[in-house]
Image 1 (spheres, rainbow over the protein chains, first blue to last red):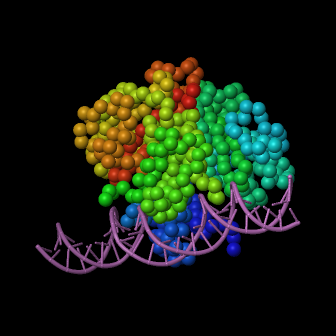
Image 2: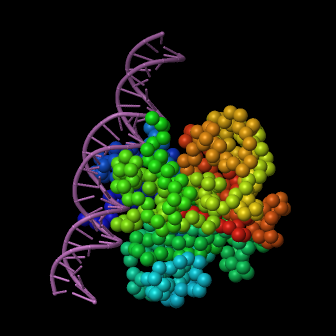
Image 3: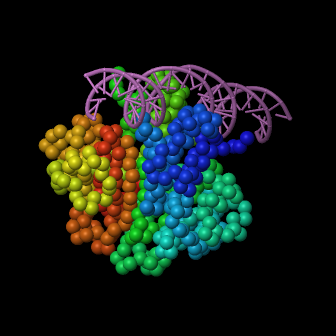
Length: 235
Length: 235
DNA sequence: AAAAACAACTTGTATTTACAAGTTAAAAAA
DNA sequence: TTTTTTAACTTGTAAATACAAGTTGTTTTT
């Protein structure tokens, strides 16, 4: 029917249930065999879905016991694959678009290597400022190759997740990525944007996100105010 | 024979080969079917091993192509599971023990919840300063529960990986973990220890590492000089 | 010579089956 | 009543098999 593998469907279902609170911290998910019968799949398939949830840090597994739902992170889990907005959980997250998507040439000294296709397609550039509980927390600069994305510069991004727009309108899924983290002394502009206190440093993240489309990677530079929040990750 | 699962053995073999340079960046690993015949396992087992290598960021896979060995990170991959020393790769890494392992009570305001067994066992405390290319880069504070570890306070840790000692002498394996990251303004002591330039912030990492022994977690607080290096991670 | 088709690889997904090992609660024995 | 044993769960590891789908180089056709 669909093109989406079965294990991925089950993953999406369970993920939604956990985030929406159908299960709460400490709850056991239905056993693997139950999930098999309910969703009409075999155990390896179910286990594949559960492994993905473990990788996301949404559950832990214990032999003999079951799959235990973890407490939603108090922090901001942008180390996980899901991307920024969806990983924050229930906390209120507002987004300001500082620079609407525009088509540019790739900057000189771009910190990542680009494929030929990416290089010759030019890039789409945008800047966002994201708030948690009305306080600015993320400032991010995004570069994406100008392929597969008709009319994206006309779209409204206000308070919408970039990743959700890519998925819904362009069938682009994030499959993984790599990143570097540093602590930096902020520039004057960053201090203003993120409402940084005097002397407060900024957490700098440089990410490359791989997608299901070959030669389509998302490059993000993130400046993070770690005064009240932290970056969280499991491994 | 052993207690170690087959997929883990293959993982260790391939991991060693990649780190030692048997394969270099861009090389293809033997195909899954080849690995099957060579190591006398079935494909699901081989694939399990390869998945673990992907999770570590040592290889990427491409359908129709094969398993591609990634370039050893120029940075310091302590986001990966392998622990600090083994993830740095070939770069020279020296370790100073600032505080030899001693038995203490758990500190008040310990940032993690402890199980009863951990709580009542007391903790082993140690501090290290680690150098890359003769420059101090990590300062880390470690707390481990005082179980399974006979005579550990008598051991020499100079230039040895804590994780290797735990594995070789106590059969303790790191199975995963969680962590938080922040950018902090360093204290005077940190500035001295890490040779921080004026105004240079420090990357702060708080980690809980799960092991194969129940109720045995390693708690580390790391201060990282991100002036010349960065923390690297895949997901 | 260039383009299209094909064959021989590769990894991705999925089923079925089996047993090992850890957990828990009920049943049996002391 | 307390302790021990057992049975019925749970997840972990592993084999054998099948087909789908992406990649690559060769062969065939145009």
